[in-house]
Amino acid sequence: MQGYFITGTDTGVGKTLTSCVFLHALAQQGLRVAGYKPVASGCEQTAEGLRNEDALALIAHSNVPLDYASVNPYALAEPIAPHWAARLAGKDIDLPFSLHQAQALGDRVDRLIVEGAGGFLVPLNERESFADLAEALQLPVILVVGLRLGAINHALLTAEAVLRRGLTLAGWVGNAAWPEPIPAGTIETLETRMPAPRLATFSHQYDPDISNLAEALRLDML
Image (cartoon, rainbow, N blue to C red; front, side, top):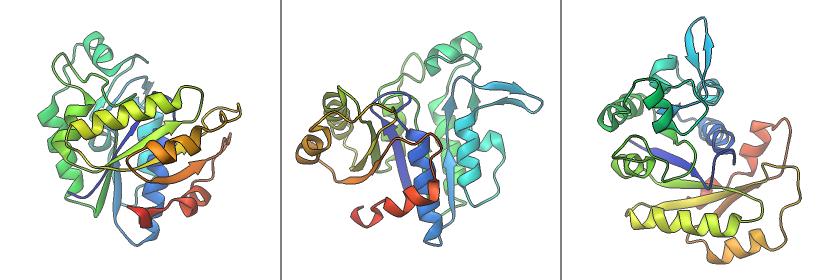
């Protein structure tokens, strides 16, 4: 399996945006690509069942036919931490099953983009977290940094957690997910202290253009 595991410094920092940008950029290189969102909370009930807008975005930017259940096997209604949403739904998120689903998708494509939920250490169940999933997948990690006050600490702590798992931190993406100005010195400080290259910086956009953002992504640095 080849691809990347997309994690973030927090929830709402732009993991899905970054995942879609990666899918688009890799597809532009002639590769078969698919997105995988193993667990998603905050899903809406539809005629087809529970659906998550992040998982639907990944499907839209993949270039192979995908059914929803293969992309998001654990779709949970409550908009809270996945392990708690699963508990309320009477489910247990099974790590081996999530890995099996990832492998099944990975066998069909050249690159698999796996998107986590929340931050790197968000629990999956009573025993395991997304960090355990990333470790089991052994994919290079891309860290999405929400560019606001506190980003430096959050980014460096997450990078340290990734490296302590023996994983490769392939790069980081800075995303201005909020309309407020990026705090002075944030990007410059991260460039000198992060143990991986900055692959892109996304300015705040209410309606992001994925193709334009993909052109700014430095895949050559991976």
